[in-house]
Image: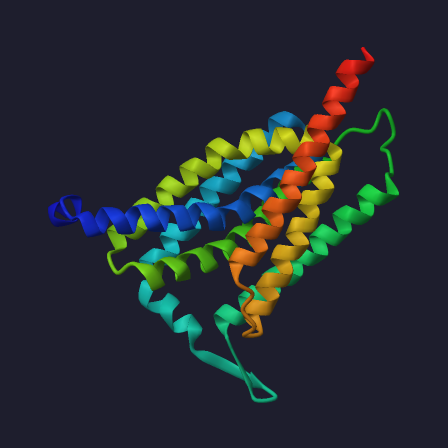
Length: 241
């Protein structure tokens, strides 16, 4: 352990892996921000805390079964000469779930069905949100940990990077969720991001890797345009006053 603390290579690996884990965690933060926007604020905060705690638990659990995890990349079924591993199957299933969930939310936003004024949130809504968070956490945790395994050999560095990334995600999830809730158009953009992420996961499952740099650049460009729109609307409201 002391050797790792005094090794420049270990610190460099920790910083690099932490940065990658944070980037991979952006998907988790976006999903959390969208999924908790339909429940009351106090429940939304609890849901974010539970969701990120589960994300941390899933990642550490997967790291603890490292040998089994590596075996997930071995083919288990072949369809028309295309081999699929458990990892591929999970990525395809998770990607389809994200696409379906985001499409359903987009449909609800476009239809703009307002609830009755006296309607109260259903008691089961909070638990349904938690179930969806668990499903997505499992998918993102798998992708995140397989990335960690490919970069670093020391499990101590992997766990440290995961914990630091989850802390950063927790700190950023609240402001991101509030921003999405306060600006309805950004929610539509976030849902479009979820569709894009889902397509990328499905493509990975079918052995067609889309470079994440292209995806994150497209997301950053769209988010920048939306930020300018938000600032322009705010300035127009101030001028109108």
